[in-house]
Image (cartoon, rainbow, N blue to C red; front, side, top):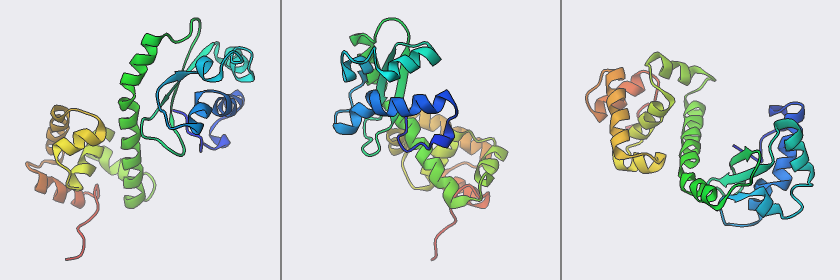
Length: 205
């Protein structure tokens, strides 16, 4: 996942150099100047200069790849975030680009889950405590995310749309949550989550 706001300290050595080059010369830079979020390869985005660019040479030397495909999150604006897929040999064909476009909702759903869990940790801190409480209840990160949306009053249909998963999958997660928390319905689950410190407490009367 590329993230233009990622600090250099999160990388080291050649990884830092690759990060800065990718952010400037590959599809990550391409999307910063337009609203279109269709997946595009570096060769198409940069043009004939791509094979001889510093970024292409660095990727070849360190990762032994020749081509980069940008798959941005469909709704990302500023900063634009998404995935960079690398490969050696032939460039990404039209069929691969179409497949990447169909897959775009998947990383978007992962990003929405990340944002929800990040906010959950911020509200329920201190650092590490919410995750430990969820782990004590044997809840996975996805089940924890579904639980957060349940406590927020979202229906199963709305949860599915929010996370990019089917209603059937949501119901399966809800069943697992009920089993792990020892509850039988939504209201009991919300109250149990509050008791365990997995959700915000009730507001003032």
